[in-house]
Picture 1 (cartoon, chains in turn cyan, green):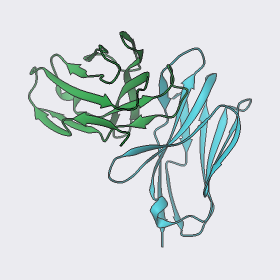
Picture 2: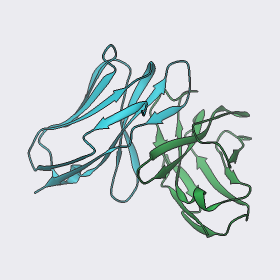
Picture 3: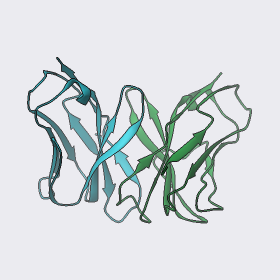
Length: 109
Length: 114
């Protein structure tokens, strides 16, 4: 079983819909990252969380440390949000990153 | 412009021919790392470095070497490449000395080993 599981693997939605992507992990962590990979391949960091909630524009990320779960929400989704969204954790007491396999999101106009 | 650069961006080589992929950052970051990305497996960490002369293995270090002689550079060395090392490689850097800070990624290097 992978240490980091994302769901769904693929998601297609209509423009304007509220999107939720989930990340569950099975190990103790010191931080969790949400990354975005565009169709061209480039990867950008969206959030880094160790507790609570963060918001940037239409994106919201939450984490529940007790339940070992994080969610990424996109409000008022737009076709330009189409990308692969990747969750990564930093295991407690370690310095490396372990990744989920990503969620492929397509927003249709 | 603050950035992480990788060279080459594309490389086709043959089994056993030593190669180096360079990575350089201009943000004075302490932490640098190499990842490979494969279909169905996602991103996996190869090696990382918390500071100059300090490196550690990630999840898939076999067949790779790294060095961190200067803060800005973190080359990835494949001494004897094999076809199973065909992959998309990303270098990344961040401010802190661990993975607990925002990661800045390079553009990627697509490597094919024949």
